[in-house]
Length: 425
Image (cartoon, rainbow, N blue to C red; front, side):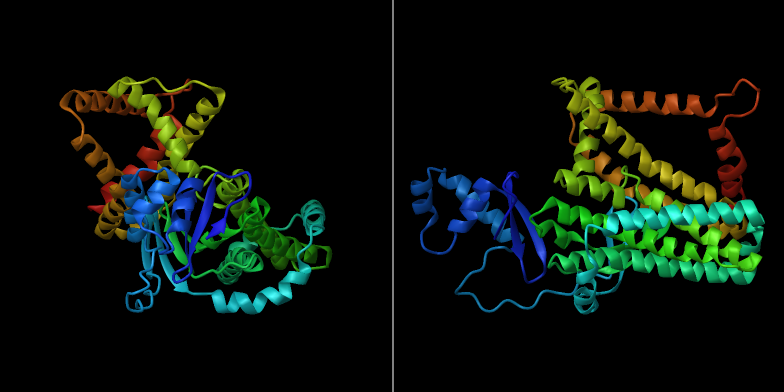
């Protein structure tokens, strides 16, 4: 059992066989520490003053989680390897490609001497020089960016971007290794219908210092931006117009990906930096729950949510998080519009599979919640949800002052609706 930070209200329990970590409160950790076989539950209850039933409940929970070992039992079988395919949450499907732990352990000794606080300003200087180099080249030579979108440069650009993203994820993994943790899963994923890569850095939650966890979350972006900055220094050399265009497009794509990764509304690097710095795991879920309490209050009745600045801020953050996921899915579908139109009937199946993949888990959860409600509460929820749908539809049909369709209507009528109709043609 590993103690948490002094300013935290939890301890960490590490299950070494399969690398899991559990956060338990200080009182729960005290109970777990006493379960060494030296006393019975009733004896511990008498000594601690805790009700015996509460202690038995905790023992049952710890047993179900696999953190208790029966000394008289036979040696347990080795844990199964991590699953290849994992549906982690709504909109996220992961496919494990490799267990990089052995590789990371070999890399860490070479990287450790290079890690120093002075790296942060050096990366900043490198990026500033990159912006200056790109600005000088664009102003002096006016390179034709279209040269980078020819077939061969596009293939090379795709390979370069994939390699950069792999190094980005290895940056996270090495940061975990520098802290003494292990990385057991690395692979590709579909995140809100957008292809990406992932690195399982959950071991970083064992680290006692928040700064270590922030470093793990930021390491990928640091590697990606450093590599981009180094490539951009080539712009100071006399290069062909094709190579200039290639470097500028490569740098722009990496900067765009870095900005997207800083988005704190979904579980990307920016979100994990905030969560690690605040030491608040599950922040997004709690924020969405806080936002939901504001509609459940008029829909279901009960106690009104507290309107303190912190609670209101958390609820607003949760509302933005709840909107961000569906917005990314709609954006992905909009971007895939031309591709879907060309696929014909096959696209219809892709549309349905994509929507089921994105929304089935929230839909099942909502259905179970409705099923457990009383009839009056269910009616109020459906009424509020229906009102929200009507308001959304009202926004979709708004016409701006020029008499043209709004942006939302244009996206629907010009991209999504034609793709859907063409898929059945």
